[in-house]
Image (cartoon, rainbow, N blue to C red; front, side, top):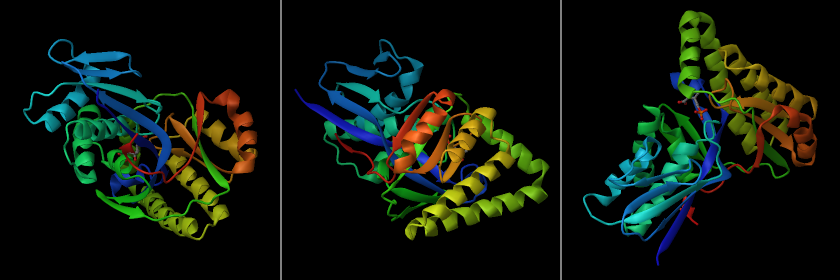
Length: 312
Ligand code: PMV
């Protein structure tokens, strides 16, 4: 019996979320939390998600939540009648801004294309996964499927992605702390755009500052300047607060983390809930986790810059 498995990483936005929507750059990294998909032989097309507790049997029972994967199936089968059983099993929390749906779509496309003997390159995989993302998010920027496919660190601006070779400072960690407050990226983006329109003459300075932060952060990472990196995260967070996407839960985690030794802490992704990103010396991780335990639903001590989609 053939069984083919692939895994694809989650992401976190280090700098530039929201500002990226109006054409400023963002810096994003792949992290070692994974969506895994295995494909095995079957006499029907079955797609099963362990996380959602749903099972799609083609033409018999097709739950809405799994329809994006059927889009990938149609694309890859291209009229052929082959059958298979796909099992989705992801460590990435849903709706927390870690790119769970894109990572699953990328792992699914990678595994199924290998199972079918198709020789797709990474560009094809990312493009096909994007089609599934469109069904879920409407008009996504494409940042999630790209980082999950290629991995590493990416500089993104107006639809153009550039891989950046950055050595991560060895003695430092990133912690993603989930507030447990689910939010919609769409609602958060709309709120920010409204404020931008209302206060344009002020907001443009914030957007320029955000752009400068991304460029300074890349320089700081390249020279291993951890103090500067932490400070830039804190300034970036201040800008996000000014955009209106902070809530008491994110602020408590940011302030408690900084009070207990973090070099930097910021909202990552859309805000209004979701995760806070904390930059900290490895020796201080336990301290921080203890200090925020009562405020967080879950936490992930993550490794940035990991490889993109691969066999597993
Ligand atoms: O929280 P997430 O992972 O959905 O990230 C949203 C990032 C935004 O910049 C707020 C929106 C976007 O499309 O880039």
